[in-house]
Length: 156
Image 1 (tube, rainbow, N blue to C red):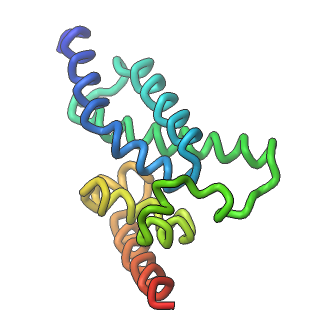
Image 2 (image 1 turned 45 degrees about the horizontal axis):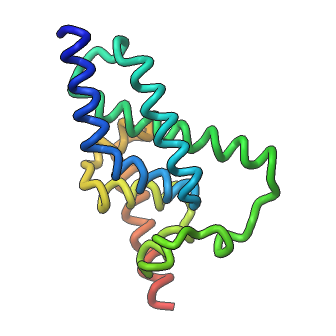
């Protein structure tokens, strides 16, 4: 495929996935500003490596993987710069508006990220497993355990 056509596919993928990338980043980072930075970094990295993505259909997954990686880089940087704050103090308004998202943000990242990917992005277990570099069984287990934890929190 020509470079120009590949760039068109990239732009299409960014438009299709930007909201989902943001939601996943928000679940991980709990900060709208950091989530926006992570998404911008992910888009830039994906564009830079566009020629190395073998399958044009994998651009969406590559964008999401880069988003998760960018979030982890921001978290790593944040740990070095700022002492860990209380999550309640840094929850963005979008979480305050939705009790489910508020409870989800209280879960460990290993549970909240797969749940957000599955239910806000309608991603399959296979897609989530590829993006998070886990087995499908691990993803299914984390979603199941996370939903149980979420239910327990909400019942309390």
